[in-house]
Each structure stands twice: as C-alpha cells, then as structure tokens.
Image (cartoon, rainbow, N blue to C red; front, side, top):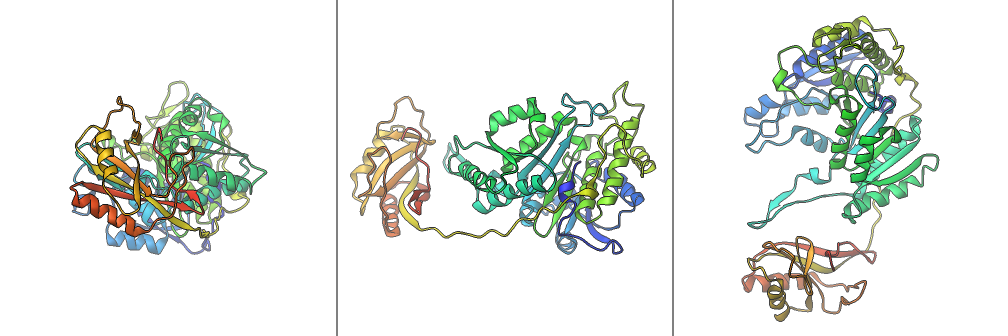
Length: 504
C-alpha cells in the first residue's frame, strides 16, 4: 500500500517515546491477522505501545447497539490512533454500522485507498495499475437519515455540504502535489443530482484552479466506474463522494488483484484510523489460513502517519520480498508462481525473516522520502443572503388523479400563496401532466408567492414570510389533508436553491 501521503502528517512523537495505539482485534479472522501483524511490527522495531480495546460483535451482543463502549471511546480519544481489524455487525435488531459511527463521530473525513498492482505475484489483468481513491467519509447517503412516509414511499436523504466538499477535494489535490501525482479525477452524477453532486463538481472546479500544475478532469460516475474497471492505468488520483467512493474503491481493489491485499487510512483533524478493507470472514475463522496483508499494509500506513516511515518502509519491503519469493496464503496461491502455500502465522514468519530486504521486481517502498504533509485549512463560511420564496408540501393522498388534487388545492383561498405544480416521484403531473405517468400516494405540492412569475421559461420568485407557510399548513390540516413533510424553498444571493420537477 502506497501511503506516502501520510508520511509527514502533523501527528508525530519522538521516536524514544512509544506511541500509544488503540488496538481492536476484531471478529472472525480479526484476532489471527492482528496477532500476525503486531508480531511483524514488533520485529521491525515499531515504537508503538498497543492498548487493546473491545469493540464489535461481543459489544453488540451485550446490548450495546453501537458496538463500542465508553472505555473504548476513552482510549481512542486519549491515543488519537486506532488500529482495527475487521469486525462483524450482527444482522437485524437495529445494530448500527460501527465503521460509520467511528468515521462520523471522530471526524475522519478522508478515506485513502491506494491500489497498486503486484503482478505477477497477485493475478491481475492490469499490471501497470497504480490508483489512489480518496473518498469523502462522513456525509452523502451515509448520513443514514431515512423515513417511511406513506404506505408506498420510503425516503433516504442525501446530504452534501460545502465544507465537506472543500475539505476532501483540497485533500486530494494536496496529496497529488506532495507526492508527485500528476492528475486528479472527480467523479459525480451531477447530470441528475444537479444541486448536491453539482456542488461537488463546482467546488472541484474552483479548487482545481489553485493547482495549475496538476491535470484535472470530471467524469460521470457510471461511465467513470466502467472506465476504471476497463482501463485503470488511465487514472491516478480519484476523488469522489461517500457512496461512489465506497463502490469504486472496492472495484479498484478487486481488479488490482484482491480486496484482501489492501489497507485503508481514515484521516481526520485529530484522530486517524487504520484498517484492512476486507470483512471479518467468519467462514474461515480459526483455521489459520487468512491473509494478513491488508492489515499489514494498514500498519505500514499507520507507521508513516506517526512519524516512523523508515520502519514502515522496512515492513513494506519485507512484505513485497515475501510475495516475490512465492510464500503465499491460499487466497493468492497460484501454480507456477507460488512456491509454497502458507498459513497466517507462517506468512508472518517469512515477512519477519525478510526484514531488511528490498524487492527485486516490485517497486520498493520509499515512505521516508516523502516530500511533505497533507494539511487542510479550516473552512471559512461566506455569508449569503437567504430568502424564503416558497414551500414544497408533501401529502399522503390516496387518489390517483393529479388533476383532481390540483384543482382542489387551487380552489381554496390561502393568504398570498398559489399552487405552482404537483409532482409524483419527481415527475410533474399537474398542470399539464401525462396520463401515462404512474402515481403513488406521495405528492409534492409546490406553493409560491402569488406575485411569482411561474409561466415563463425561467420562473422568478418573490420573497414570502414564514407566516404564509404556517397559514397554508393550518389550512391544509383543517381540510383533512395528511401533510407528511415540508421543504422550504430558498434563494441564496438571488440564485435558486431547489430543484425543478422533471417536465417542469
């Protein structure tokens, strides 16, 4: 794992003082691969002091739905570094994702996943692949805000913020600048999500101007994912939002040879977490055959981050040498390339025996030659004039004729508001909708000021008072309408801050 980006982070301690690390041994194969990895780090001279914490399946099953207790939180806050093996989240019963909890609670905004081909020792069709996926780690659909609103309709909110976009995009460019990367590619879906993904694209274009020496481009996520899978050598650094990054980082790892080989760094302002990207693999737990490579690479990233890049190089080069020698675990064993199939601890033994060696075919690790640190300035908010210009009222209405609903809402008198349109699942159905459009029981009814100009190519809106919205909701309630949600419509410095309906 190429983790040079972490080599000269602000977190440093004098090498004579052990760095305390909160270590979670995890579930399934977690304890086996953690044991192997810690043996390697110790043999290499890593100056760390593990403090073992309990999190994951046992904590979940004890009745704690978050999977982490107060003692573990305290150790993490004190040590600022987490080294974590994979954990198991029990299915059902409302258990929350521990990884999401850790990333969001600790402000671990940047997920860094390098994938470098290890051809021919790990099979891949792309021997020249060298890609880094930098994924925003806290927001997007992973905010986890979901509602069931009607009998038919369920909702998940996608939250994208300007601070989140600026932070992760600047991180990607600083990464490229500090460590010799030539190109940053942004992947979005702003042809559909024009406001949320549109913001990510806009911020990317703004920040790219500050790095004229670095090539940049923007791709739609669907074709970008396809191209990544077909021609990964065309990519250098990819920066994207949370869900897209989750998907394409696994695509990259898989086409690079194996998800089991890759480590992951989760970087925040005050805390950092290092982990393998694969799961806990309970089906092979206890058999001693698991590949510890992903966690080893995460450990290398951790060493670089805490100011011990020379030790990180020592471990990484010994690991690469072991792969070259053909000592492989079952998941990467191949006739004609491998010379022996080894278990977890035997693999670690070979890595330890190769400490001080450098690979002859694979590219040697050179973390200690890192040229700088990746640091992000604090976000500064620029105040904008915000004006309320309307409201979307969502109704649970059992009818199936939008003209009937539209006529009802247009007829009754509301204090200085008028119905502009009705949409169903985002498609305009009133006025002048198509009878072929299938409608559910979930209706978005847009009301604007009575002086708004809506029958134009580009509608214009006028400021309204919140009292008008309150009066509207009171009227709808008195008439027996089931209001399930409202969204206020705002303009910011005169620019529309809400989407139009499809067909509007």
